[in-house]
Length: 206
Image (cartoon, rainbow, N blue to C red; front, top):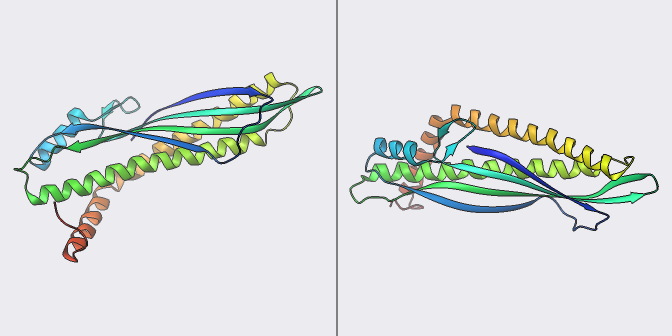
């Protein structure tokens, strides 16, 4: 589940910036949960999970996203053009950490291992989506062409970025919807695979 997207834009006139695709900065934080049974774990996630403003609910995990754009301009006689655009995605993932009490049964431990891995995969996928749109922002801004002056170019950059970020938000929401619909079948498939791996001796059951 993705939390609200933030945008910070730094405008740099006549600057030479390093070339390259969108950059990514990731950090992780954790919240602890207890519980011996699946019902208790579910209750703990609902009580302690991050509160996502977009949905008004608590979730098993969340990702806070910030886009920072650094733009370089070249100003000539009666015109101004964006010559460089670098966008960094700053992602903070909030994930659960089960205290794994000794009374928890083996099947509960197995299901938790499967579930927690899927929660992390889900949040990492949000970051991949964000980086793809950061790259789109960079590529689109570099193609905006010459404007009357740098003030006009900056306004154009702001409008373009806002439009792409709106697309980004819709893509993130669609991803959450699809993941929600497929949740049960996905977990069952992952559980089956994990059991097969354990039977084959490729995994150990903790």
